[in-house]
Image 1: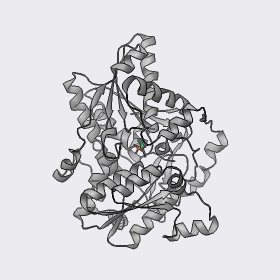
Image 2: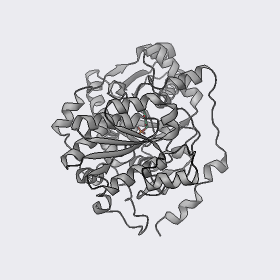
Image 3: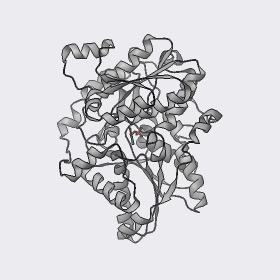
Image 4: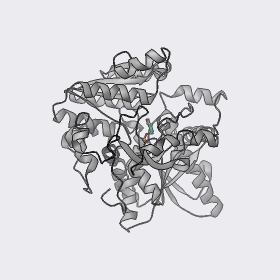
Length: 434
Ligand SMILES: Cc1ncc(COP(=O)(O)O)c(C=O)c1O
């Protein structure tokens, strides 16, 4: 944010349409994280205790994908940063550990959160275990029933996991009264987790993406990658990452983008989203709620509308209706790029990567790989050497059902109609400031 030519617009209180202040956020977040959310500093020191925990898996490897380069017969050099070596198997613990640290430092006893398929919940469970914090997780019911292994991972790290909607909150009970067989949604799970945090002074809420402080915690990925590429005597022409809320994309790309913003070096940063949830490429830039229930402040972002229901593609972590405020502003200003890809192309790329590099990527990460392959093939066609870096943000070892469905031919692409795309946008008009 310190280096952006146009700073992001402020989040607004939905009632007053005035910028939210620290006091509005205090019931749910610890003060240090609220300060980070609005900080204009270029750098914020990583606390020593957090660095000590990072040492369990950081620095993560930067790998030259020789096997993939060879298979594609491309003049492009391809590097990837592998975040799958973390305790949760993805980039998510980078912020989970930092958030748990600041909560503990403020005397918080319990953290609540929501999780979809379980990546974020796993990361936060691990982080809470490090600091002796209780962890209460609302997991979207359909995933809770269909994906038991992530739940067991969370339980193993000591968290309590509840299928959402649950009967533990007003939000959950209201949904169940309307529809006893509701399979839940991220929006409902967020409402339950926030409600629990607001109701108890010793409990706070934690979010795994979208917010500025979350993106900032993830920039350790790019900071390390810069150093590692220096050792290799290289600097990327293109940085690629998948985008759900924006945290792993920001994490790897922002430290490189800083070079561009400060006029030191040009670099293209490409965010890859699923064609079934294309907020960056087909959404609108407007104020919208971060959750379905409308509990959060209004955020200025590219969005498909908070009531947009993405098709149930297998990359669960990319099925979010909006994009982080910072990523949205950068895209609006033409400083980053975005593409939307279909899931069959992504799984095909994931299989190519598995065979050539030996790591089965998370379905989210396959989106980056598919775009890397497009760029490498273009380099070959144009006869141009270029250096590509991408974030292998997680492994897919707990996503075998997705691969099984792909290999058995059960997956399909999803083409949104114009009316599906615009159906949830009209209700955003009254939310805009006058
Ligand atoms: C492996 C993986 N990659 C990417 C994402 C997308 O989130 P973000 O855009 O915050 O990185 C998720 C979210 O759950 C995830 O689990």
